[in-house]
Length: 175
Image (cartoon, rainbow, N blue to C red; front, side, top):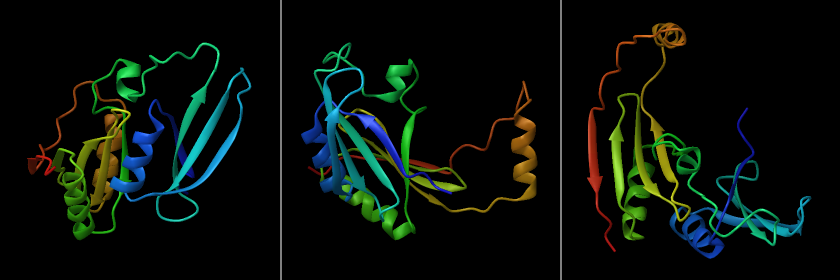
């Protein structure tokens, strides 16, 4: 079972639309417009990621009581956490797609951080909401020993640190 959609608030829906449709390659397929139960109204935009069962969605809010223009859209900052903690990770089918996505981000003016985590390979940039977004390719497999170690870490107070990433590379924006 996967998730159907992730819904986030947006301050600048035009910037969100440009990023998620033009830079990310997702397609705006639906908007719901209506009143908010607490007052005011909103537009709820849905972007198809790969098929009609997987979306990322954004709320554009209007005249909602208690919501001012200064609300925080960065999930980690809103929670008082470092940027890398709360992030949005999308899958890719192979290494070629991962590198195509990196080039696409760079061409759109995005700086890209690339990390080989030893079991997955990821690229990261920021979206217009200031959230860290990731494309990730699983490159390893999982053994019973991996599961046993993961289960043991649930109760471990002094864990042995994981092996550091095999590679970390910064790619500056092209534009």
